[in-house]
Length: 192
Image 1 (cartoon, rainbow, N blue to C red):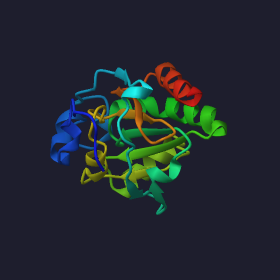
Image 2 (image 1 turned 180 degrees about the vertical axis):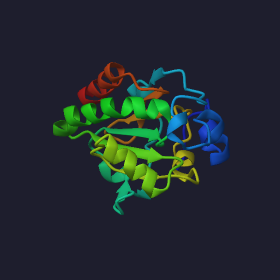
Image 3 (image 1 turned 90 degrees about the vertical axis):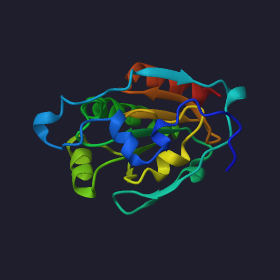
């Protein structure tokens, strides 16, 4: 897969050890949900249609044992959220992502989570607690994040990417996703 643009940030495209530097502390106890976190700035980036690079692709098995392949979702926008269970901002944004999923499900927008740290047990407990209706793929080795390296790669946990109908990254929120900003990003991609 060729990339036609220069990587601005590839921090998360490196092995998962580097990811730990950008995310929550390595402990996974409930008392620490709100401490030890170096958060993304919440900066949003949008890429105009004419400046988007090639389409991305990856395949992974969800925690439920289903196969998800990004290229099979062509023709519909895809919202990808990078998270893990003990990440305080991930926990904070989860209810907003659920509402956005409900809002856009009828318009064909697909949502997928990429969990960068958890085994199935903690990940599925998080999904149950927050009633997450869309699947997540474990990516403990960073292979999916590596496949997403490029112009607007995920560079914090959480990060949220919006792919256009052709599978190109149209927008990114680095850090906690503001639901109104993410909704506007999805609306713009739907209108294309």
